[in-house]
Image 1 (spheres, rainbow, N blue to C red):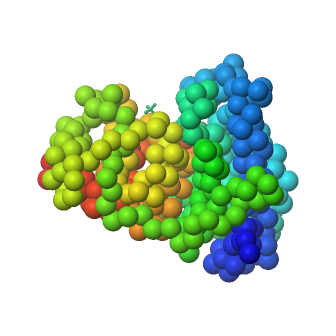
Image 2 (image 1 turned 135 degrees about the vertical axis):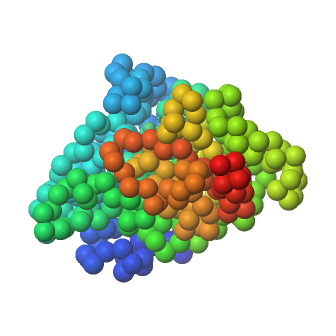
Length: 330
Ligand code: AHG
Ligand code: MN
Ligand code: MN
């Protein structure tokens, strides 16, 4: 008998929220939006969703039509969920306030609606990433305080990778669970329960076109992996350019993904709130690690919703070896 993500989450419900089904109804809004995105992606050039949209977002990036479609799909489906206090999107400069009634607006949903935009038009995997925080109802209920919470406060996180199959991976703090979209019934069906990241992997994953701008220790670290000096065989390289796809392979096969700081950008390129934090939560729940170099990603206190961070995520062996190399380089 199949287990859908909704059924699976209801079983986990106890560990996430006190509300009866509120959280699973919220997740349902996210999965519905991803099915709308998947339907567009499946049609590729036959749909109207390839190419540039013709606007520049707050990141200074040219929005693709699918960025905008995915963003609007999530805003629409989550906007109908009474339990959402605020939404934060990579594509919108400011948070969107929804139900600010502390009694009902219980969750903050933070998302990258379409990750890997540079790959949309070349038929390569792209994704959607989401992070969920509970509202901090303090005496002065300041919604900003509820939004800018460190990653270890997340109540759930997940991603969908749109590829040969469409896979949803999520954690609500009790392990990492994978589901495959069954197009015959339009449901995400449990396909990989309690996923664990291998202790060490065969790959490193990074954009080495930036190598000359990194701190030298990162170049030396990758050379050490190529020489096979971390035990095991010399490493091979895999880099898709869609974070979600590079992360998903790392979760399944092990290894390390790195987007280091550079002279071009001291804080790297990836965004803390809707790329690093959700994937860090999943990595740790699967037995891996996620750091900005010296510090655990989920311990970082965000200062603003679009802040960037260096991001190194993957198997324990490789991440610990990088932290050791950084400590010795000081
Ligand atoms: P987004 O499409 O949401 O802006 O994310 C793109 C990110 C991430 O998906 C990927 O890992 C990284 O950009 C690739 O950056 P480079 O092209 O600089 O390697
Ligand atoms: Mn992204
Ligand atoms: Mn994006």
